[in-house]
Image (cartoon, rainbow, N blue to C red; front, top):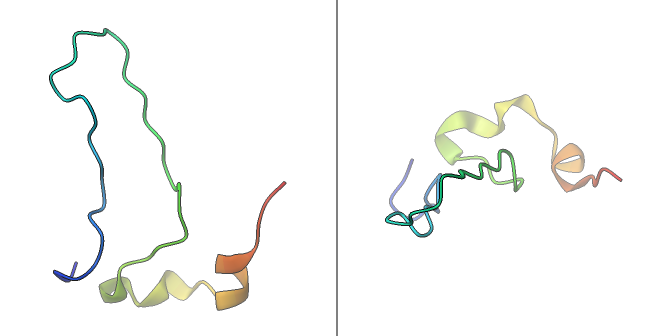
Length: 50
C-alpha cells in the first residue's frame, strides 16, 4: 500500500482486558491502488446491499 492510503486495519483498545474480540471485514469500499481495483467496477463499489 502507498503511504498516502489509509491503513488496512484499525486496532482499538489494544491493551483491553475483555475476553472478546470483534472483527469487521470489508467495512468499506476502499481498495489499495496497488491491487488495481481487483476487477470490481466503479458501479459495484458504489452499490449498497440492503
